[in-house]
Structure formats: structure tokens, C-alpha cells
Amino acid sequence: MKALPLLLSDPLGIGWNLLSLDGAAPVEPSTLEMGIVWHTQIAVLLGGHVASIYLAHVTAMRTFSNQRRVISQVPTLILMVAYTIVGLWILSLPLGTEQG
View 1: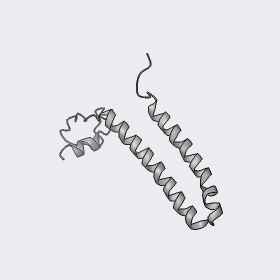
View 2: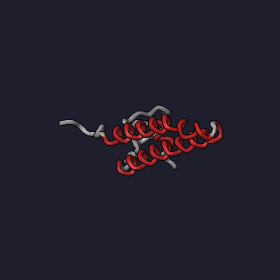
View 3: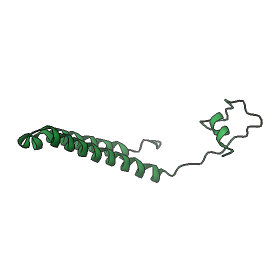
View 4: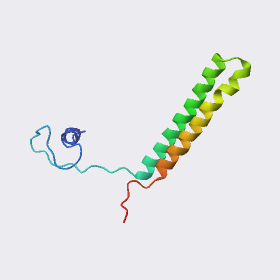
């Protein structure tokens, strides 16, 4: 917890002292394991899309008559499947690596 003011004073870890702290030594930032970050992003993306489909389903069940319930959900389902495919594709791109 002692490192928190130093991290706030140098948020990018490049030697700044924005808060003018006395004796502020640079704090070595801990690195995140990218596998954990990637899996968390996948879980959040899929969880959000599943929750969106579920909430759209619940809303359609309350709003429309029996005949229109299924038909009303098809555009949302198609759109969310497309969003999921595009989101997973973007997360699979090697954006953080140098192209050599």
C-alpha cells in the first residue's frame, strides 16, 4: 500500500513525479500475464453477449404476442452472433507484437 502514492505520481512508469513526492523512487510496475488478460477479455465478451441475448429474450416474451415472440428475436440474435464473431476475431489479432 505504500507504493500507491508513488504509482499515482508516476502512472506510466516513466520516471515522472506528478505529485511532487519527496524521495520518490521509481516503482517497478508488476506486469500482468497476458494469458490471464486475454482469457478475462474473452469471458467478459461472451458473458456480456449472452446476457444481452437473455435480456432481449425476456423483454420479447413480455412485449409481443405468441406469434411474434420468436420472429422478434431473430434480428437481435443474428446481430449478437455477428458482434461475438467480430469481437473474438479482434481479440485473436496479434496487436501487441512487433511486425518484423
